[in-house]
Image 1 (spheres, each protein chain N blue to C red):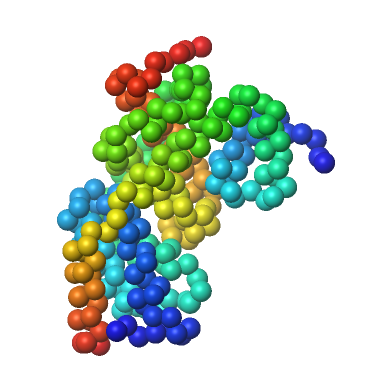
Image 2 (image 1 turned 90 degrees about the horizontal axis):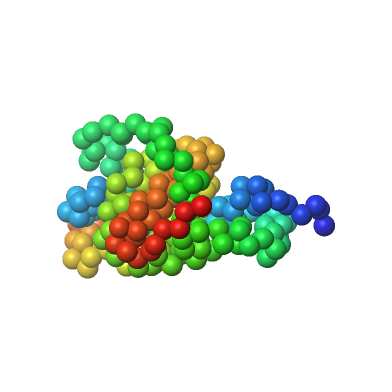
Length: 82
Length: 187
């Protein structure tokens, strides 16, 4: 395996790592670093909590039923006219 | 009802599953529930009329969100995009980040903040930051899909996202300290 990456490199890749946008190889290098480095591991957990919080908040909002019905009616009207 | 696309998949099958996402993004763009409803309906009608331009198998959600965003920019927004304030991070973001990480390494305080406060803080972000954060971290879109939807380079998506997150974290942290969810530990 290549030289282990340092904190600067790990932090630079952290956002992409958490978003799963790194290649498998680069992701492994970050994971190995996180297992060994307390400070980067903490930062990664912190970012994960933040992202999980946003994801959960997002799921709580859904398209209201009346709006869904209104849209379906409008689409049906459109289809009848077309 | 709707005509099938070239691949035979109907508008209903491809577009309707994304209504929730469209509504959420519309809410964050308009910051007004009744405008958001109109925006989603306008978007769906426009999408229906241009359904033949949709390439089957590509990203339907991104395609719909592009229409939604263009509709918002052309028909809903009265003011121009507010310029990106370059001194958003004047408070030295890394110092704040370090303080946050020291005070609460697990970021547990995030889950204590009530929904309204989180949404309020998101809505207070500049538009360019807000839309990238919403598409990435709330709707789970990839950098590439966001870049296509917003018509900006991937590098721009990444840098806006970075700044949006830091700014939002800073605001939520300050709120958590104020509410006593967390006790700051400096140094």
